[in-house]
Structures are given as structure tokens and as C-alpha cells.
Image 1 (spheres, rainbow, N blue to C red):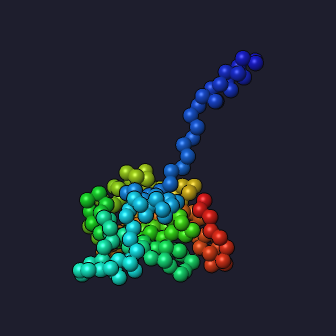
Image 2: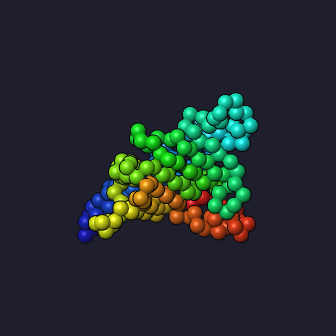
Image 3: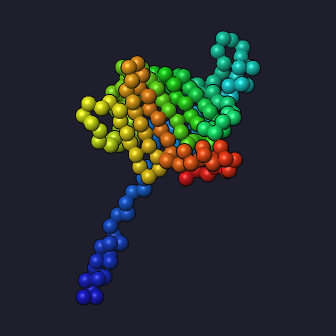
Length: 183
């Protein structure tokens, strides 16, 4: 009996641990990433400084076109946007990043609706299969312990929203004047 218990215990200990939930993202942008890391990786530029130093008809927004500025609202301390980022060779209309206390809590991307299938393929490649949906539903959803993705096919655009589960609480705490921590 004792040897059976030991064998069962060893089998339990040898079994692989369940994988931690992956944090959702797109390209090299991952929910919960620090502003400092994304500033370096995505080559952020200050919109205000870029406009002030503009010598031609376009501001210098770095290699990937991200302009950032401080925000004075509960949804973000800093907002960044790119209108030139590419997603697997397709043009995006916009990628918008919202940071609270130096962490990426929410971001979105939009593209022309003709790229819907390519956008969904990129989402599946990075984040796995979406949750089952109605057969005729072009709106897709991914959810795990840390966050969610919602993809919508509109008349003219595909819109994808990425959000940490703790985002709504972080916004509420910021509105109430409390410090925000990223979970």
C-alpha cells in the first residue's frame, strides 16, 4: 500500500504543470508590458516635441510611427498612436496604446474591412483560437485569466480591442485618486 502511494505521488510530481495563461497581444505589443520596454521597442516619440521640431510637412514619429502624449483622464496617463504600423504586411488604420502607471492596460487596432481575414489569422497565430461563437457572427472573442480580446467586423473597418481584466478597476481607482497597480 505504501509503495502504491509513493508511485502515485511520484507520478503526480512528474506530471507537467499546467501552463500559465499567456498574456494577449499583437505583433511585439503585449498587454501588461511596461511603458519603458515598449518605448524602446516601438521607438516612441513625443507628439508635442515632434511637432515643435518639425522641419518638413511631417513630424518625426520614429521607425514605427508612434506618437505619444500625456493624458489627463482616467483611461490613461499616457496615450500613444501609430497610423503607419503594419500587421503582417497589411496596413493598419491605427494602433492606439493606453498606459496607466507605466503599464499597458488597453490597446486597440483598426484596419480596412477587406483585411478582416488576415487580421483574424494574425490574432489566431499569436493568441490561439477564439471562443466559440454563433456561426454567422463575425465578432470574435478571446478570454483568459489576465485579459480579453474582442474583434469586430464592421461595414468599413475591422476593430480589435485588447484589455487587461484589471483595466476597469484601474480606471475606477484612478478616478477615485488611488494608485493603480498592474495585475
